Length: 558
Image 1 (tube, rainbow, N blue to C red):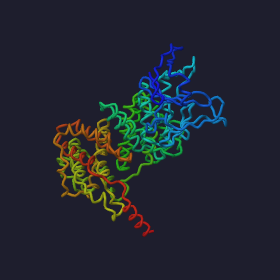
Image 2 (cartoon, rainbow, N blue to C red):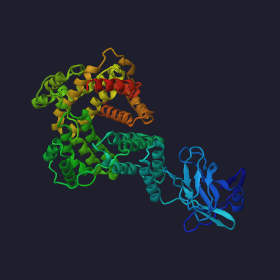
Image 3 (cartoon, rainbow, N blue to C red):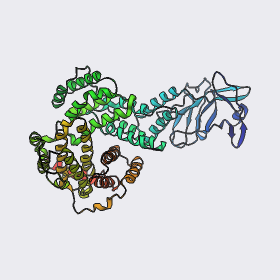
């Protein structure tokens, strides 16, 4: 260990253990008093020491904001009271680079921010000694979790990253932080589950597959940041209290009636009857799936959210806050938009009632690529006898459409709101299909709902393709290699909006899974190419001229 005081290096002498504490001799007190401050190094740490009116204080040297040396900061100190200035205020150290201010007694940031570690100091035999004992791992993790929660007031990716890294450095499981973040936010979602919860298992899947710990941490930061963004400054929207014995039909009826109180109480009863963890979710799974597919609704979000909630519980394992995740999901199902009630999709309900499962036509992707909603539904009914073949054909058609999506509609300003169609719209046909296939694998009775709703996506999106678009530029020669490199690109995405990054992760994981379950299927090349375009084509999200044009058109008609 060495102490550096304006170029003077003094060797430090270790001190015998004191009740398990690790005290080290830093430097002579006289040397420190001569300059008022010093920088010492020990085991990779840099520690700044200051002479104050209250005594010697020691603090980690790096400002957590951007790493600037606090030893170069400005000390506000003028009192004699122990630990405080003359006015009773704590001694404050200001980082001169960005004006962050730290209480030298606690390391806390004045006005909020992640705290800096402070070190106990003793003066013995004219030598400054520092206690460099690390706090117990559990205490370090609790402090990091408290910092993480405090960071939700002013969300910043870099602060979340530091607190998650502190949990990791203490030997903790970062999933604990994700579970805590769900608990903190689930009652702040007025309309229930949003993209942050839905993307959580996808980011965990990418983290689990990443070899580099930096990549793993980046995935967790993205998740925590999205949850904070969804809940930012929202008040609590408490869930109804109480529970009722699980009744699957009653639950589906409560969702249909938009009766949140009954749906929540029934869900609680089902979770309790099923037992802890994933077993509780399994007890209510089929009811949730039925409610999500009871309509063509919420542009596929309902079905996707059910599957992502199920996967989140599985990936969080024993850390999973099952009730919090399920109650948010139930709320989102209750208030989901029923799009099969609008004219564009009014053919859905008659088609669902007409499903027999005996259609003998052989489904082909070309049947669905540019057909209307009613035609897609009609052709799905005609091919209903072979649901697996029908699914393959429709999934390939969805990839065909995404590959040929007309970029005009994604960027043009002078068009009605109804034509605001971009790649996120096209991607939902694929991610919904992926979620629906999972559901139908567990509950085969749901195949008609899944397939006919995919048909609604295809019929709607078919009107926004440009057959002449040069899709070949997105072809992929090595699918496995592409998927591996795509994961690296999604993790280091460079996007500002969490909703965009959530879709990147969701789409990647859906395509990766569809390729894994049928690597030799005819749909694989189209899926890989569609994903390539989705991830890599330049994409404009905020279009000020479109917003202004459509606002003026709306006001003109008032």
